[in-house]
Amino acid sequence: MQGDATDLAAAIRHGSLSAAEAMLASLEAAGRQEPLGAIAYVDAAIGLASAEGRDRERQSEPEHFAARPFAGVPTLAKDLGGPFAGLPVAAGSRLFERKGGEADSDLASRFRDAGFCLFGLTTSPEFGLSLASEPAIGPLCRNPLDPARTAGGSSGGAAAAVAAGIVAIAHATDAGGSIRVPAACCGLVGMKPTRGAMPGGPSFGNHLGGIASELAVCRSVRDTARIFDRLSGNSQGPFPDPSPVDIGNGRLRIGLLADTGSVYPTEGGRLAAVEDAARALESDGHELVPLNWAEFERSVTSSGRAFADIVSVNLAALITAAALDESRAEPLTQAFAARGRALPATMLWNTLNDAVLVSHNLWALFDRVDCILMPMLSSAPLAIGSFPSDHGDTDLHLERMTAFAPLACLANISGFPALTLPFGQDEHGIPLPVQIMAPMGHEPRLLSLAARLEAEARWQHRFPVAGLPS
Image (cartoon, rainbow, N blue to C red; front, side, top):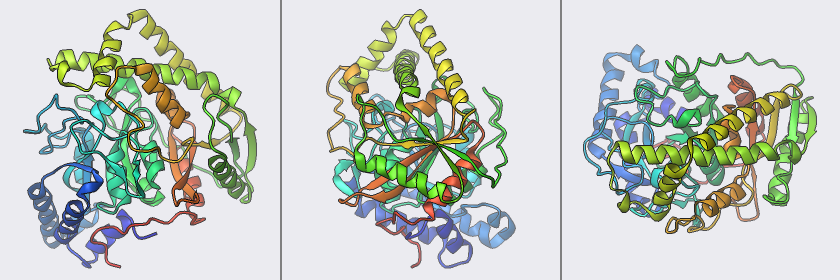
């Protein structure tokens, strides 16, 4: 598998390399792979200071050091969400200048407490409005598995950096598939947690009405499980903390959705990967329950509309509250802001009510099944430039995103957890991702099933982790 963050943490803990050496290796890899466009901002001094602090802690307080699951592991924050003190987020936009840096968010504090050493920000599309990470201000992020293709969005820089081995794990956010789509593009594991599981305070600047969540893109299921366990819980609002549900080892009812309809069709090879994953689980004694697109179609439509309305209104409010010069934004960003300002309150209210029904309808499905196995992407990662932002047609842009990832928004609008991982590769060596959804609080079940599929070893990372001893 060419290593993950757990391996790198173990090497640092056992003295195979120091945190400072791991940081230097990541910085060297970041410089060498600058043409990939994964990283928008680097502060080597902050990264080295953090790593050297962990090395001192390892010597002076070894028990405290050992209690951090990712002690000394270099990582990157996304240029959206957070914030992380000392790393000036610009949201992929020329509307912000990279200077100063806010205090840590609650989540950022937990990243540091877990032992991570941060040294930069990964590329995001302007205000996270795309499933490609190609902001006009640059850099243009490419997929390390095929530089002619997108790494996805909006956490595309994070996914590219992890897949390329610059870092072993990276912070990511997900409001409409923004963790899972890039993970799927780059052969990684990405999980969008249950609504309320992750802290969003103290400012809740990335709240987006509850549809957004933050976690990471990872090279393994075990990394995903470890970081979720360390960062989740006690989120202090605005939702009750979901209580993780104990998983049993009995026979599960696996809902199988191997179709995305005629309007948003998924390529046959990608549907075959979902069916192969289902058969692997069936061989363990689980029951497959066929589901059809008609049971999802209305919820998918409502989810897309809710995402569009929420992000548009949020963007319009942000521009007003921060007194930003909107004329400097990309044309598509300006169009989304105008869409938000023009949206009647009654229409937004109707949209939010429809979103509640999306969640309710999924709960009804989960009366019949224990989880749902489904496609993540309809095709291989698209060519660079497939999601242009130099126009103002928001409907066209939203349609392009839905066609690429028809089921991405469903987890965000419903609040349910969802996880993607690669389960094979196509004839060009591009990953074939699958997605699993489960009821709220069932991350342990998602992770258990994902670990079972990962054990089939149908995907191998192409690039080793920087600094990890071979």
